[in-house]
Image 1 (cartoon, rainbow over the protein chains, first blue to last red):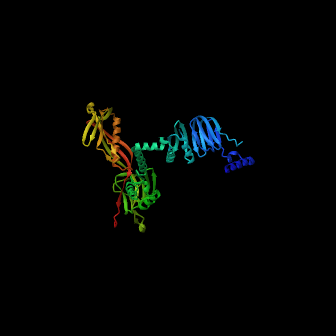
Image 2 (cartoon, rainbow over the protein chains, first blue to last red):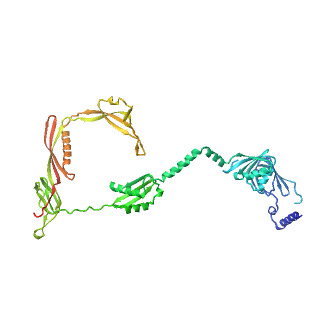
Image 3 (cartoon, each protein chain N blue to C red):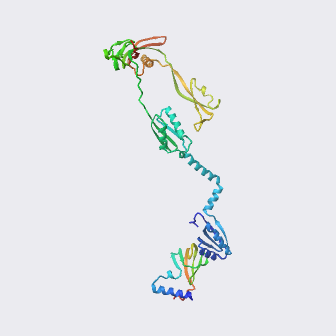
Length: 99
Length: 392
């Protein structure tokens, strides 16, 4: 109940005050450099990790990254630098309430 | 897997819940790098000091872990352990090098006569500057300099220089003017028959003239000066040069033998151990020429310039010699005679004397010899001191 209230307050603030979403929401932020690097910030844990497929837990579901020869170059809290050949980035369990 | 720090190790984690391990690492802020998945295992790079934390995390899951590759630091440590002798040797060498470079190896004293040098070297040693001492234990150069100047007399200035392991002392001696003795009243008289060439009187009354013939004992410069009341006696000083005459008789054999070397050389080597002589090479070189002039050189190795090893190498050089008796010309004979006469004369007269003229008076050959009589005109100091006896 309280969580939902908090969320809606944040949504409202973003709309009204013209703030960028990633600052206030806990949504993941991805930075890709070609196919070579992906930097994922604001994730909430690794669900699966192999050299072809990485699944990460994010706020409203999962983030799935597919590719070949994936390695985690660096692990920092809430930050992950993936290296390899990235072929696909996909969100699973898309949240409908955001729309 | 490059870009590894010096104390980072490669770890392999094996098990089912690998994602759990990774998440835990993230939560506890454990810095792991280069995480790679191969089926059931994960390899990653981690700093050595975090291994215990990793162990705890892995222990909580059902996984196992092992170190695949040691860090460079550990590898290096192993290497050092294996070659401990070498590394100790290297360290000792470097330490010795530094230590020896701090020692004094040479003390040089320049610009002093032997007596003063000895005195200085003793004073220096008292201060502590001697071969084998550590230079950093000694007082500074300027202090040494002032101490030396205080201690020693007869030194105007001492410069102390340190060049590497050498101490250099530059000494300037004090030169005091010689004290003049007060000579007793005297006359200057002639000591040999001569014709006066020039007179230079410093004190006294000149009694002779130039071109005057004097005999031994004749008074040249008198010690009495002044007349009547003002008469007094002085030590006559001066220089009277006179022309004197010498005769030299030189005998020269008509046939002259000259020993020359032909240039043919043989060498023989021997090892001298104490008084025992062990020939090494060249046993019959002695007999290779009909007449030889041997010369021997000894080579002796020395330890630290101090101790001689009682083994030396003797090298005997056998030079072939030859006796020649070339025909002699008359003029050459005269030349030789003049030279010989001159050198004989030089022994008789003082260094200041000059030979004015030389003339061959007589030449006579008998019994294969030539007898040559040479006459010399020499200009020399002819004064001798005669004391004035008081009451005369």
